[in-house]
Image (cartoon, rainbow over all chains, first blue to last red; front, side, top):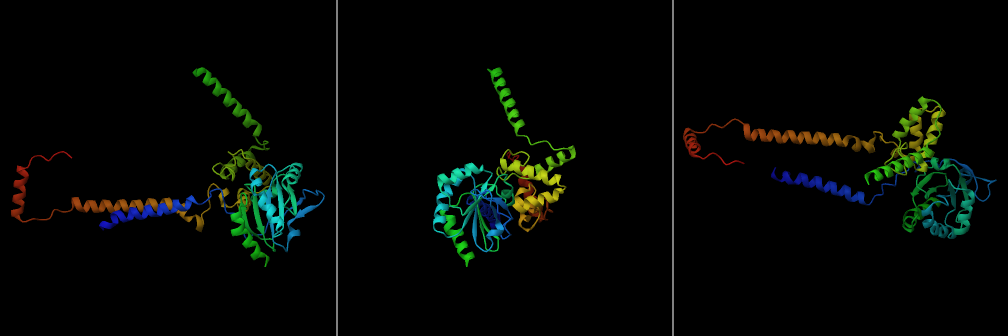
Length: 176
Length: 161
């Protein structure tokens, strides 16, 4: 009974410390998306470089693709852009862009200046498709499989680490 | 000095209000709808500034979502349907009151479990203390009692504390 006097507070302390320690390494801004393992929301939007033509997610059935949400006004899109360029150069996976709440002119100018890694970009002028995809922090990147199911969502800029450890292995796996 | 400060603050407030006024959303027709919007917007979270409701937030996404909520309401959707619409896109996190389910059970039950645990602990300590101090005085043999009385009579009043 004597040992209970200090062992119970000690146990509570250890549990609390464990929770706080795990909490240190979690990003509160990363909200798990309810879209994972669900069909990607349908869209049909004008293409940035060819406004007469539409880009729809139905066209992309049958291949694994990345949907990268970006905008010319988005500062951290600049950070991830070199990675997207490399990914496009390696031809590993088709990357489609969603130009989110952006002026098409500004979007085109931004790509002309920084390089265009996208097979095509769709223009989401009023952000409605963004809402359907649960976008709240541009840039965001979705991995969508051959059946059109969302498999992964990266909130915030892509990093070399997230590409190498999560996204590329997942894409290889899905492409089989 | 203080008058100057007061004026400066007055000006600041006026500016703040003016800035807000331009950011207001277009008023909806009908007071009932307006009240419903206000209530819904205070129950939904802005995902950009996570500790603000949709009603409080000035973020662009919040105003987009307010617009979305409004158009859904005007299309005759119920409050629950509107919430479902947002949860399907952003997850339970958009609700300020998370729903009770397996993953949120600890969140909902936690405070009551702690309260109950504390009450049980309190009761146990009280019981143990009660047993130690006010239990029936054990009968001693007359010899010991006499000696104890003698000791008590000789003793000084106990020091305070």
